[in-house]
Amino acid sequence: MTRPAVFLDRDGTLIEEVEYLDRLDDIALFPWTADAVRLCNHAGLATVVITNQSAVGRGVIDEPFLQRAHEEIDRRLSLGRAHVDRYYYCPHHPEAAIERYRRQCRCRKPGPGMIEAACA
Image 1 (cartoon, rainbow, N blue to C red):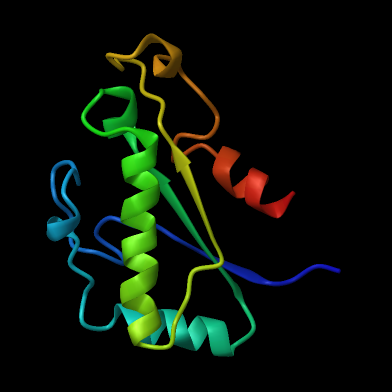
Image 2: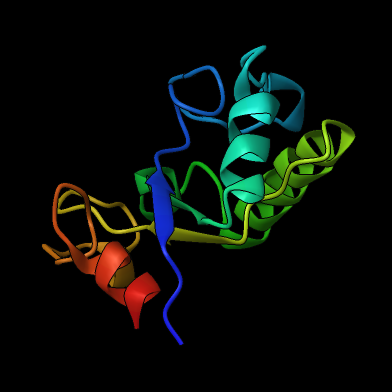
């Protein structure tokens, strides 16, 4: 069974953009974020966040911190009776400091990889 979905960027769309989100205290949802996500939820849309996170590859944050940041966004959205169904992120960057993340990939936006993974 297929389900229609909405794909949202994280930084500058759901939360205020900061250079690299490396502190949970820096997470600031826009005033309309919970309302917009809740409307997507009520419309029956799978609400999916796709986000480039080169901060992982650059060694600014690690993947456990990124998970905690998404959990904090979820917690704040739940206060507005809204939820994200799934997060997809790309930690890669051609100039990443951490070798396993240093590459060109199809998942880094504007590439289609994260959307393709979500659709699968």
